Image 1 (tube, helix red, strand yellow):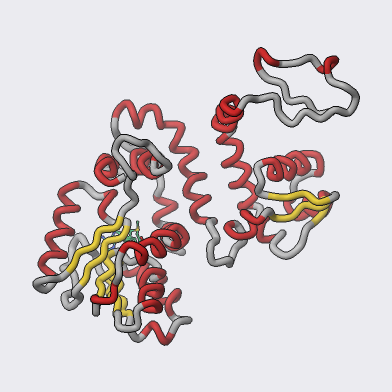
Image 2: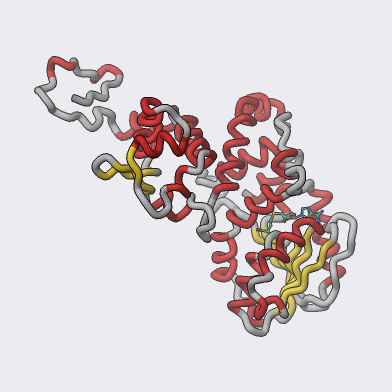
Length: 325
Ligand SMILES: C[S@@+](CC[C@H](N)C(=O)[O-])C[C@H]1O[C@@H](n2cnc3c(N)ncnc32)[C@H](O)[C@@H]1O
């Protein structure tokens, strides 16, 4: 018998008949509150499963508890709790006595799939530590002291975590940008802080008359080169331009300049500097596109709260997100 009992409407086990299964005695708002309270569990279950390579292991096959316990190197009893918890939060599905990926896990959590979100999961896992300082960060209006250097400078593999994160989280904005803006009248686009090259590849594949100059730090440009190498037909219309947008002038020539997810986490002074550089580099009639996540309305809070909190926790110029998010 499963009994899920909470607060004053709790019923005694004696009142339940035999094998009666009670899914939930919670009202919708109690259930929502419980979901918020246990949010840290959910995030950590996901982070641990990803670290132990569970979803990629399950990419093509379901396994029984014994096999997963061996693969995950977690003893059988806690492994059962772990797997059943993942089923409960819909990251796994159970069929008979085998566990497999849910469709959500299969799309977003299997390494190598185009929409893999591993670096994003890692970012939020690191924010879990930063959240211990959330109260202070809010009260004193300053970022936390959590060290994010590992994320931005990954030892030998410099900046790869960050570049992966940008690459993964760029899927949706890249698709949205093309819905918002028609690039048919642009010949050369300068993508300031263009990251991995996902946008450059997507735009050049959609607009045959468009060339893209990808301007980013040299180590990120090297990664963009690796990403773009398998697309030789697009490569001829993509120029990679390593540089520092704070110190160097923008390359001249493009008729359109894009700053996608660039301006929001810099101070107002730096934002002005970037806009001035864009103005100098553009020909008369040139276009500057600034693309950021914004609230639909100042008065209606929505899911962009996560980005505002992220900036508050980690960015010294986090206050500027209030203008944009
Ligand atoms: C938030 S990411 C956005 C990447 C990309 N535009 C996107 O939306 O996926 C910011 C980008 O700016 C680049 N960046 C940061 N500081 C830079 C600098 N001083 N000069 C050039 N690029 C810089 C980072 O390497 C990163 O690729």
